[in-house]
Length: 440
Image (cartoon, rainbow, N blue to C red; front, top):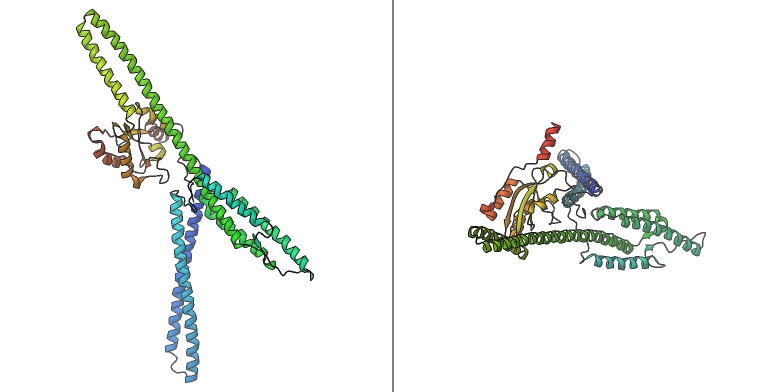
């Protein structure tokens, strides 16, 4: 299950639900462990009792031949019984240990937000089409003689087979309606990471229907039950795929928004430089007309610098891999062992970092490293690869947060950035430290 992946900020309700799920799984794991311990103790007790029987056999040498044979036969039967009981307990213990491992695996997967697709399809539309076909099958099975529910065929009322058939039919409709109502409610309230609980609930409902209808052999047809199980699995897959698609759309909007800001920044800078360039050209022409050689030399030098800046802006616009690599942290929000490694194509990279320090986090980000590279994209990708074991979000790789220390990041960056790198290991975290001082 799981978090759909759960976002870094917000979604408190989903986080609380997942927390309760994990607590339930942990409680189940503890019960399995307790059962395993009890089984081990029972096995030991059986073995002690078996050894006691063997000692009794050794002590009955004074009995008559007939008594000896009778007593021996009784003890052999008791030993065989104890052996079978021992085998049963060992099988239960093995099963309990297997379940314990499965529960532990489920807890670990849910903790990192990894969702396991039961029916992997290409996109949301494919899931919608599959669910539509399944709904048609559910409707068909609910029609008369559709096979959704099974019941006795030889029931009579006061000796009347027709009255008995009518009663069975009416009760079957009532039972099927109750099952469908509960199943529909499970579907409508389903969360992808709670699929396991939903399937358990559906099974309990089917079992309850069978118990209530036992007198008339009324029960949900196995095929129909499996169809409703598939409906739950497809619905969970659909909801997860839909959440992932929305997240991809959001990230794509963010990317396009960032690209527009970069382009607008480049256009503003180019317009500013062109204005300065034209101003210097006009000044140069005026100084040349006056014959001011010193002024001409000074303005020519300034004009060359402006034209160099124009070439840099043109290069930045043409080379989409060029930009600034940054390493930032926010100890007030995430603690000391958390950094973000990213890149921006902005001409003013601090503008991007300031945007990250918006109202969604209580404190501003601190900059550990910020440097320009013609291959900022490559450096960012290589750093993400080297820090993959420390990645916080294993599902959404665009969440560039890593649980590690700034010192380790500095070590990994040293051979990528070389002399360009100026690294501040200790964050300023001014507001956070002021808050700590105020609480002291």
